[in-house]
Length: 171
Image 1 (cartoon, helix red, strand yellow):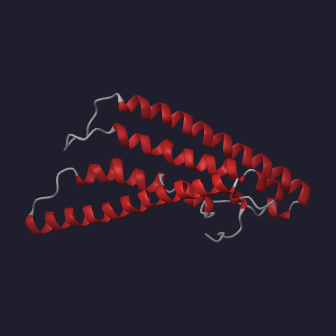
Image 2 (cartoon, helix red, strand yellow):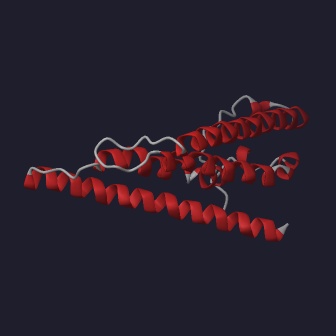
Image 3 (tube, helix red, strand yellow):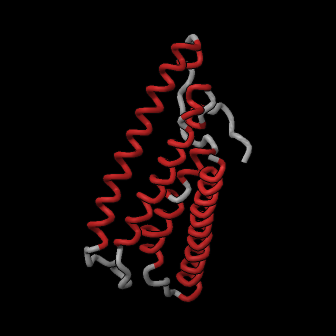
């Protein structure tokens, strides 16, 4: 199990670096676009579309597993916290199962959509860059989060699963 956890952390770190790099490129590209627009009256062609179709998608979806591990998802726990321990454990299992099924469905649906889009010749309007590869980022991010949720499954019984963390765990 430690080997799997190590590889899972490495995958998560790789995806996180991809999300951070996409955010950095997005900031630089937007800054250069704004500067060239106002200083030279000539905006960068395709900057908005590349930011919208590629960089934002990468920044959001590649960081899903890190957000899950960090407890960044919204939880409404004021009712569950007041339940007896046994009832809370049952509710936690049901919520975890629903979340896991939802992630699996999203992975399957977005994987199908990304496969269809890879064989589609649709490109961005201003630059001839295909849109298909951007669709592949979504199932990659959701798949990493689903694997992390599966690895976190034994912790649900103990009541300390990452999905129900009250505070951010140590990295």
